[in-house]
Image (cartoon, rainbow, N blue to C red; front, side, top):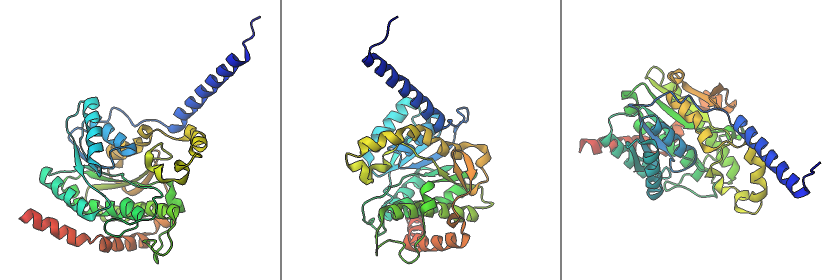
Amino acid sequence: MWIPSAPVALISAVAASAGVVCIFKDYYSGPRYDRSVRADGKVVIVTGATSGLGKEAAWELANRGAKVFMACRNMEKCEEVRRDIVLETKNKYVYCRPCDLASTASIRDFVARFKSEEPQIHVLVNNAGVMEHPQGVTRDGFETQFGVNHLGHFLLTNLLLDTLKASAPSRVIIVSGSAHFRGHIDKEDLNMSKQYDAPAAYAQSKLANILFATELGRRMLETGVAVIAVDPGLSDTNITRHLPMMKSITRFFIYPLFWPIMKSSKIGSQVIVHAALDPSMERCAGDYYVDMKKVNPSKEAQDFELALWLWRVSEKWTKLNEHKAALVNANAA
């Protein structure tokens, strides 16, 4: 009887184990959203569409027939991704537009240009974000994570609300995450200027995302604008680039441990596609979805008084009314 040598047996065992891990990963990641649902005739904006979830969501929506505007900071990278999407989906209606969520002026310029080009918007995907960024502030002086993840999208959404209402039925999708369960809104030091803690700042920004969805959903009742907060789960994207472990040799040991339970960006993006297109989501009013299923967010995320307080602070900090007036004056000119 032939007995395999030790090296051959070892290679066979490793290959078999790898196969089992891959099967487990595919099963654990979950299903894709129904491929038969189309997006023809819909105008979509996706922030942070040059990589990760935003890139895959933009690709998926373009592939289903939508006209997609990629709102991104890096135009060179955006154009590279846009070309790939157009070639792969055969959809030529995909556009790059500069929008830096760390700058309220850039956001206003993006909205002004978009409104001059398009009379409608059916889906706004607030996806862009940073995670555990080193201490710093945006161009307007906001703590970076709170400024980009929450305030930038707060301003962008509000400046587009009139168009969203006029285009109803329409949807606003806000990408949050399970980190919001660890989050707390620090009313005394919302900008974390006294004591900065990167993980706490990130968790606070993700909680702010859901509180924003809660209050926006309340305000959009009976307008035809649906509001959905989504959690893509643990997905393999470059949002983790600022984590300490990703900057050291430990990443070579830790990353493989998490890989089997990490979704690919394409699978992670399916919760966005589901929120954007599924008919059942048309009347959502700030609901929170994980893996395409409605769940309850944290207790603090369900605090309606806190959501209203955060709205008013965000309105003041972003100078929302001033930006609205500037847009009106620009259109009048």
